Length: 189
Image 1: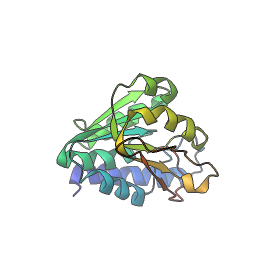
Image 2 (image 1 turned 90 degrees about the vertical axis):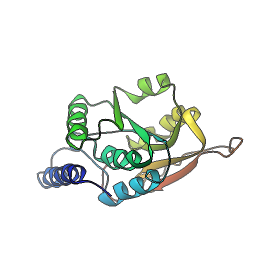
Image 3 (image 1 turned 180 degrees about the vertical axis):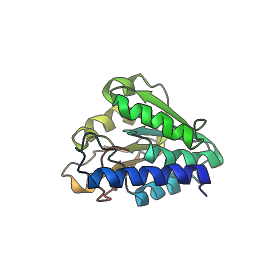
Image 4 (image 1 turned 180 degrees about the horizontal axis):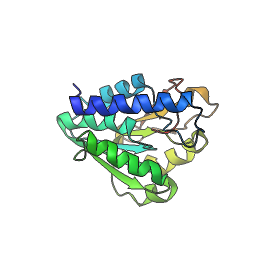
């Protein structure tokens, strides 16, 4: 289901991540990308949905965005990714272009606490992959932007004592919350 361009960029990013870990590059400078199995899970969530609108909070260099954008391109949709680190923003743009997914992925650079409130859109899927200590607050900001029945996926939430509180379901169904505990050590897409 992934074409050769996407597979090549994913493989390159996986090699870069492994090399950075071997060289003990400081955590803040690494891509801190999700595990491949988490990427496959994200792809499986979005690929079968028609016109799937995805919000990704924490795009890093675009590894998780590649999985999401590759999924939404089949039945329509788009990924809006938020990332604050300027070096990662440039890498994100390059990686998405190299994979030929520009049409399905858009980047909003800047601090999510500033950019997220200004977004006037609704989403079917939200992927939280920022700093874990900010998940609850980011979720609360994103919550009004969720379609009824939206799916919220939070990476590495299982290894944190924090829980996302959904509250009472909205009419027509509230958001579903799924945590992904990959053990990858990464918290930014």
